[in-house]
Length: 97
Image 1 (cartoon, rainbow, N blue to C red):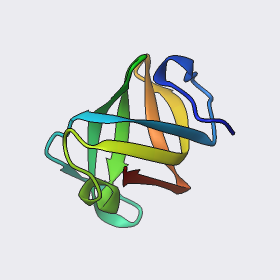
Image 2: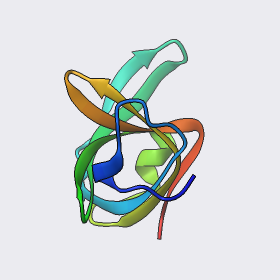
Image 3: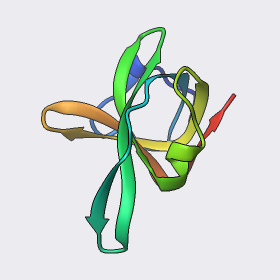
Image 4: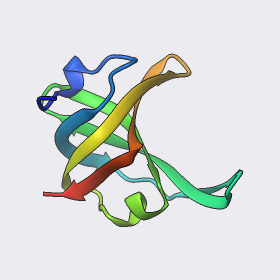
């Protein structure tokens, strides 16, 4: 799939490849899952066309820093509380570029 922009993302976009900047990186919080306690945070991801919330878990949080340009492969978009949210799929990844 060709690289997308924030503006092109829709509620059921899958296999998303996108490059942008981590605008805000809040302190992670702990949540209980069926796999035990996990760290999660919701960052603001932006490119030249807009911004979207991006959910990061565990190692994904450690792989980036605020202000970093990153590339996401294998992402997907879902609607949560009437807002679009970008997520990284099980086989996806995020890396600084």
